[in-house]
Amino acid sequence: MDFEDSPAEAAARTEVRAFLDQHAELKRGDDRDWSRWGATTDDARATEYRRRCRDWQATLYDNGWAGITWPEEWGGRGGTRTEQIIFGQEAARYDVTSGFIGAAQSLVGPTLIKWGTDEQKERYVRPLLRGDEVWCQLFSEPGAGSDLSNLAARAVPAYDPADGWVVDGQKVWTSSAQHADFGILLARTDPDAPKHRGISFFIVDMATPGIDIRPLIQAQGVAHFNEVFLDAVRVPAKGLVGEVGNGWKVARTTLGNESQMISGGGQANTFPNVLATARRLGRTDDPVVRQELARVWGNEAILKYLQLRLQSAITHERWGDMLHGSLLKNAFTRALAHRTTLAVDLEGAEGMLWDDAEGNGFWQYQCLNQFAARIGGGTEEVHRNNLSEQALGLPREQRSDLDVPWSQTTRS
Image 1 (spheres, rainbow, N blue to C red):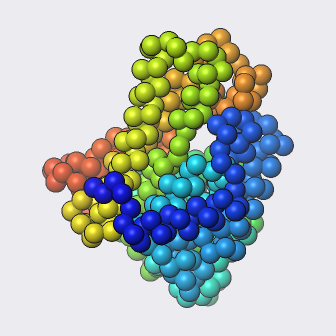
Image 2 (cartoon, rainbow, N blue to C red):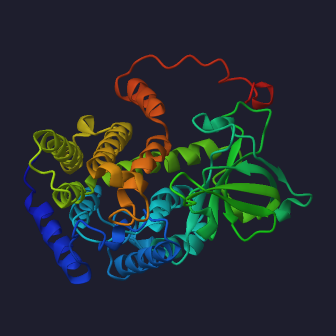
Image 3 (cartoon, rainbow, N blue to C red):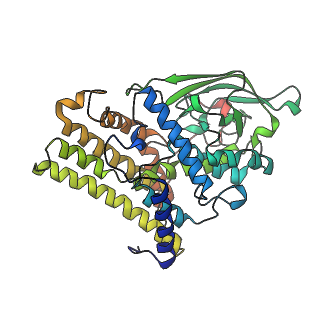
């Protein structure tokens, strides 16, 4: 692992810092940082947060810093993964975020670029990258979460094949569906094929008649997630991504980018936020508190060095040193759980408050959100299985339904 940048990396870092210094401010570590307003129950502040996310994404696009690894022909920078890592490392120090817009881009963009038709890429990729259009992911269902390939939403050909498909079903845990213009949808097109081979991947206009979006109020009092009902929803033939029945292979591109997107939060420098809370409460001389603060710092250092290892592997093409996305994802969510729980513990009785707490309940929100973070994008247990099978080469989990037609399997 290289602890120092190569000359090319140092030049890229200098260029990134110059851009950020011109267009953003350094984080203060308190409630004045708008980038932390995504963790709020205040409707006005949440609306302002979404507006600023859009504005920041437009700033990135207009200055050539959006989609760093995306091809130039589709609006990206045409850069390397190393440059993307460097940008994330530097941007973590600044009060900026693309929030829900950037998250959707990480999932949808690479998938459309790899699997979409030229017409689909021409229509959707640039507006997605600039933040002019917002997307959501219609994958999980009440009976298909960790076992996503067990999904039951059906897509059948319209009476006239030229009219495309008719979709019926229910999706759940759909992030920001109420704000989305489009969605990527997995639906079963062949119930008599084994469950992984009878799925197709679609683009859906979220304004299509028959789509009913119902926000789910979470423990924090906000509705980040939604359940989405699809009742005879018409999807045009040109909305199919990839081939019929090949949707699981397309979705694997999306899911792989999802775990990388979540673990990318490991670049975030949140230690100043926790330290600021300890200082405000006069707890920095407590040896136990200092030990836990050191653990927060250590967790972030581990994540930083994991990113450096990844950066070095890419730079020197040492593919054997590449980190598995599941390792980064689990390391990030465990660090999140520790620092948010510590912050609320430090607040003592104040930790039982919400809007009246310092910072408009920021830590209370994040402490509860740790549970969603540990489940979203695949549970810790799923990612441990991924590591055991894909990274360590251990035997695969025994399954009895892999070659059984989906219509004959037992479902919850």
